[in-house]
Image (cartoon, rainbow, N blue to C red; front, side, top):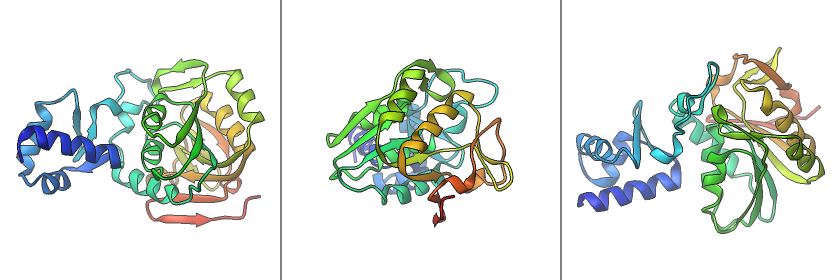
Length: 244
């Protein structure tokens, strides 16, 4: 396979699945891992290699973040587990539903994995999720606005909260930085709390989508309890719950 064909095939694969292990890319392209590394190094504007995983360079923000959390720092953390959890969550999406997709690196994969045949409305408030959704012809996207927060590539504003309160959402897919039985479900950024809570309040079903590394962790601010969710979805599967 010639280099232009390899680059095109790699880009197409990342469009479908968000992240790819180096060895899987080498197998797909029929070349050595070293050749894949060279291709990536020569095309830094298109691809990035992070800790054994290849991602699209456009998915890695250039902002500096903050002392607590930044998408750039989180992008490579448990990337495969996040993708696997999102694949399980995508199986819950039905036709003609209205969905809420939270911000963060985990749910970018969920946005990518929305089945192409599904006609859905998706409410989001982060640019990285919106960038994926805008390429899906059967998705009607509602991007909430407000003040831009670089660390999470998302927006915060009272008008967004009012819109969420008026909406009927079939399924809300929520991300988190920590999940602890005693201290609840937490995140780094205070501005996310009101948005998450408003979306959950408007949703018929609430699903927490996290990788297992988040369990036993407590971050800066709590936005809910574990009991507030209908299910918890990780790379190990979906645990249905009775919401209280």
